[in-house]
Length: 111
Length: 114
Image (tube, rainbow over all chains, first blue to last red; front, side):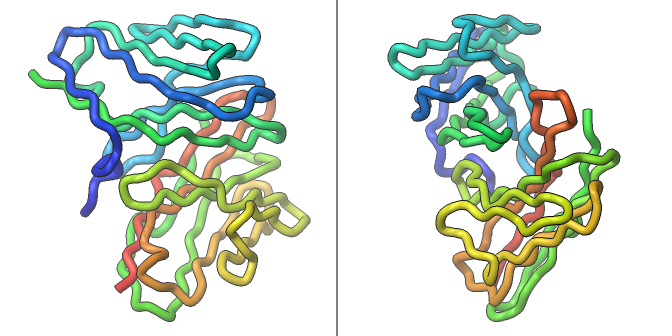
């Protein structure tokens, strides 16, 4: 069957390198932002989130940066592994816990 | 985390027919959400399903095409009616646990209309 990320922008990185995935959001009133990872045949899986009153948040091997001035969000993955290969989506949480998803980026990790 | 089961996981259907997708959650949740993910694209919210009231549909989606049921706090169905090939997509249900800011997703239903 067709891959979820077939037509999405693709970022190709070497195993062990750092990855940076970018996202532009639209609603300046959104109060928090989330990054999701979607592997083929699966639903999106939560990675990390950040509230609008923060500009940086770190997790295990992942960091999210938020620039509200230009409405830009980025996900940094340190020491990228083959298991990180997936499609990554940013999402903004509007009122009522409804998520608006960004376009998505397909990450390919070369061994 | 929340455990969400969707059925069927995939189906191939004839145009003009309807398919009902089921979503079962392992705990009670107030709101359940249905998303569509067209091939190679991101997720688009179809509607919010609340128990005891009619679903709230987003712009571009109507109840006649995507009727939704929410008979209790752990279950919902989405029907894709009078299907055409343009309805070929992955359909996903999603929930937030009470007090949690993280949305959980089912594994999706991959629908192909021929």
